[in-house]
Length: 194
Image 1 (cartoon, rainbow, N blue to C red):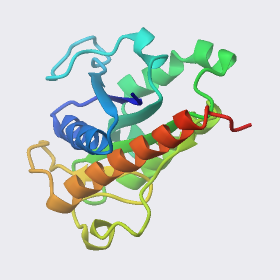
Image 2: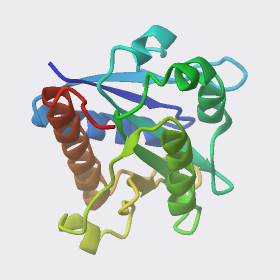
Image 3: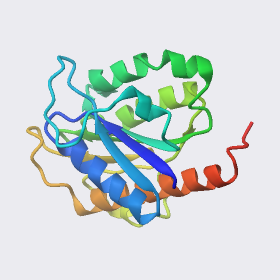
Image 4: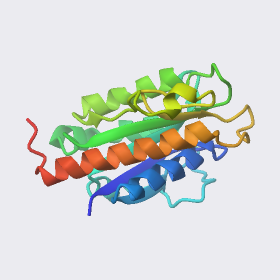
């Protein structure tokens, strides 16, 4: 079975909510979804999902990485995760693995798209294959609460308690399906890309 690791950091739970929707899409596509959380920079944990263990990275055929927006950038816990992947980079162990990104901001112009674009950079350095959302997704034309071609997103309100918008949830599920399908195709092909 194709395995997708959904790895995220969430402070108020909005990013965790998106992780659940992406995992739903992964399962709908016939793949296995493993959701793992990153602890806060101070080591604290406030999430309902188990914490990430480094050995889980090698078991995955694809990835979805999530973070709240911090001034248009990914949050420190996700950046710290990427900073710890030097060994994987040297070995090339993530090359040709598909990956998607997702984020949540407190306000409409809070930086979701900038954050998503920035989150794609480590994927490219690792030789991973970024997966986004095509405009064939109807919700992409209707959303006012999150979602873009660069990945799933949502506007959660300044306290993080705004409910996930219908279109944002649909786009997160669609991203999970697309990611899982890409991972299945690559796995069946024996990951023969150069």
